[in-house]
Length: 306
Image 1 (cartoon, rainbow, N blue to C red):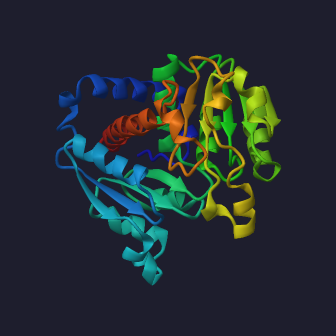
Image 2: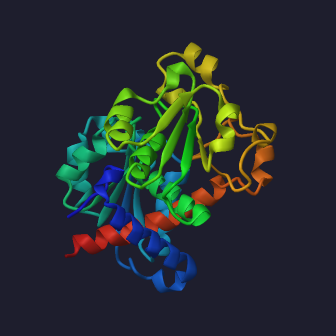
Image 3: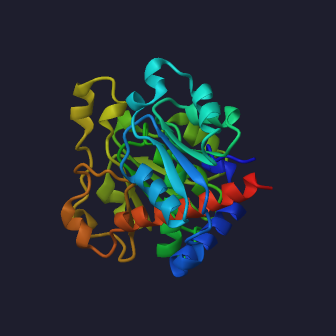
């Protein structure tokens, strides 16, 4: 029985199959409307979320299934001190599949080792967010027609940005990829990502603090917010929070077919004026997330029944 904890748990072939399924769902929604009839998804969200939780719930409902769960730790037995392992064992008695978000790195992995049903990591601390990466991959696929020979810029909080770490991991498996890392010195991508992913896969990369300078090179620009919840002191957050604000003047030298992405929520790192630019893809990304979560739920439930 397979769970999804890290994007590298999926082979490129499995990702391709899921993209194929997601595209078929987009074209033929009625065909999938009862695929999960009688099945229950448990959404265990120990940390606030809008898009991810509602996306999972919408995905399950559109597959004809049902949803149970909670949206904050205080409304679960975690508030009484129950362990993640015990929660996972308990929920396995009620549901067919679990989607878990947790502030502690590794919590969904612990859940997957103790649950008797598939567990999907819906974000664990600053570590991983594989289903956001699936949304990102479907967006890149639909906008660019594939994954090879792309230059991808990651901008903003590259230190704590779990979506950035996951997408770098996923894209490192394709050919002709170049990575541009744009951040303040304090929020640079962790050295283990550079060593274990970029260098290990011979991916050419550059690091810079200047977004405008590298803009003309980019096929994809992945903006991120500086995350207040990952900072130990407010002073550092306030100093860094407005490091990069993407506006129309900054796009003057960008490619005409640039794909602008953002995992959301946005605070002010992308001007609302950019929303009407045809290159803005972040709300398409949200919709693509629902389709990929539908494809993932189908895949994991199918494997669990084998």
